[in-house]
Length: 326
Ligand code: PBG
Image (cartoon, rainbow, N blue to C red; front, side):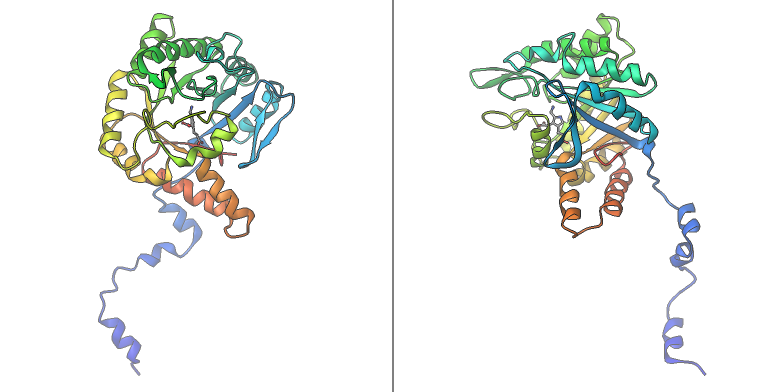
């Protein structure tokens, strides 16, 4: 007896049944187009010169600021998780208008880099290269009369890059969005004998409100004004491609789009247009949102984190900088 259902079903062409490939977990795994692994991640660490023991960052649950003496333990954990790289942020013991501690030989980042390389010579060490953690006003450059002086800042960034390379950084990551920073850094590194030090440039970095927890973590919120005179305006996508083009021309080896989640279209467009490795920064606010919802019992943290990271990779990122790495 033919049911009404059967009759209806025959009306469709059901030779194509995508569900066939969703039947079993190993089968779903076999046809996965995007596969996430620890090898994709860079894990940011915050090293605070003033601390003698680690301290949790309140707006970034389970992420600590660590003391220099915590480095061996922290790095051993990173290694055991098979994470290939760390991104080092330093909180200095003092700040001034010229960000002196950013390029001091015994600056906190330089000491941290040396300690990491001593613990794990094979771990890739990326040094965040910006002045905002080191200036007393919290801006990413030298300030004159309320204006961030682009070209004077370049000299300090170039000096900082050399000091980080000297300390053992494999990659420097300029994040200040000063015009010409990649060229200035590449030139100085080459002149000082660091032709092998790579540059991972925060090429398309937006003036985003998602950085708020980070600014607490790194104590780098600007004292006055905001960063909109140097970071990009969120509505712009073509401009991001222009920024990336310029950074690659200036010698960037890897480029970053930041933040990630509200800019997946930018990641996807950059992937289609450029050949260099592409990184995306899953920033502090994106992390904090998931953590907050999970703590309230509104979302299940682990699958959400994996879905977020998979989405960023599917959009086209080769590398993901994320606090979820561990
Ligand atoms: C600045 C810098 C920022 C972040 C990384 N490097 C903050 C800013 O531009 O204000 C943000 C990272 C995050 O939110 O996770 N050197």
